[in-house]
Image 1 (cartoon, rainbow, N blue to C red):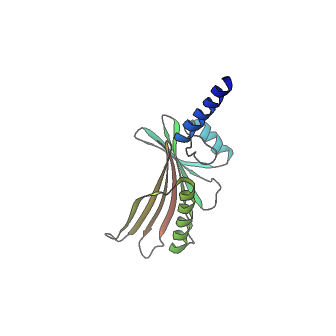
Image 2: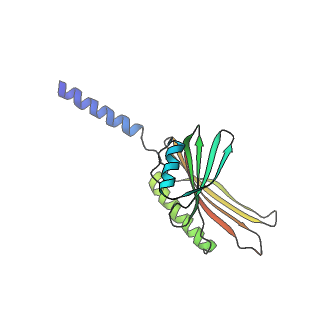
Image 3: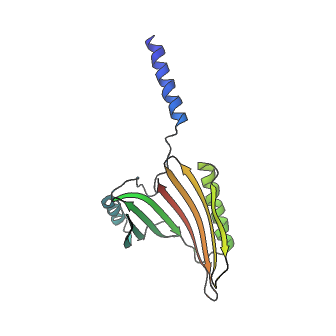
Length: 174
């Protein structure tokens, strides 16, 4: 009788676990959601990254960080609410790349996230030609547990200047 009860308990927990996946996205660089500002700052200092700016926006504090080593990573934006980490945005720029290479990279990243988290939802696709600046924005979103992942491509072009292009990967705790 005791063996049957033990097996029933194991089966129950396995069933509950599969019915309610515990999976959630973690922020990059080994951080955890709700890490304190002090912990994030200490890790950034240890990585020799520079906090280029600190801004207060409504009930949040936003840090723009430069110097984290990752190919193409131009800056990282950390967002804190009540002094706890709630979002990390990675902004990648490749000045020497063509639009075709950006499109290829977006497709690669999207495919990777689709395979890992299921098909992403298109949340933005558009071109604006109303002004002298031609703007393009394409974005996808994945929901995983109580977290969200967004992938965006943004381009702005105003002749005779070279185009500004960025790929952004946003991790958010909800």
